Image 1 (tube, rainbow, N blue to C red):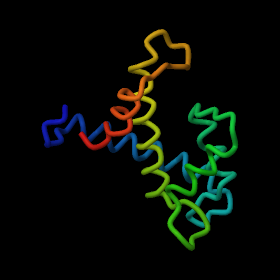
Image 2: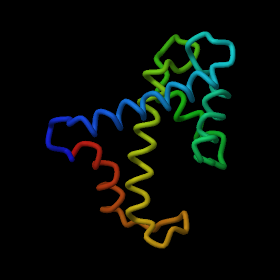
Image 3: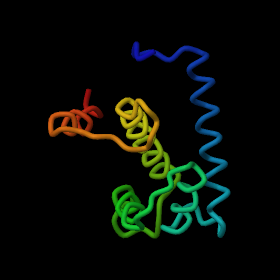
Image 4: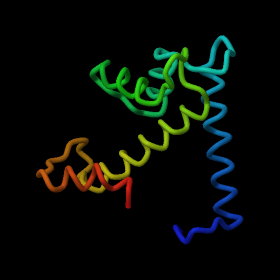
Length: 119
């Protein structure tokens, strides 16, 4: 409820979410090395219904959250990416009121969407 505190129900939901995400991460970490490579990340995103058409989208997301000089995304980085995408999806759905999968934005709306993460 964004009051700065977490009650038991919120904690329970968060705990379940983290466990689901952990299971997803582990299921795509085929070689059990603790990181997802770009292909494993793409497969995890596809399962989560992020059906990006352009392969560059996955590449850019992967490299945005991958730490320099590492082989892939750790669970923490995977969670950061999932939260980022979840927030974007929520913002997108606010503008896609007809559920068509596309929106039109003017310049100000675009800036507001980009800055929403800082509010």
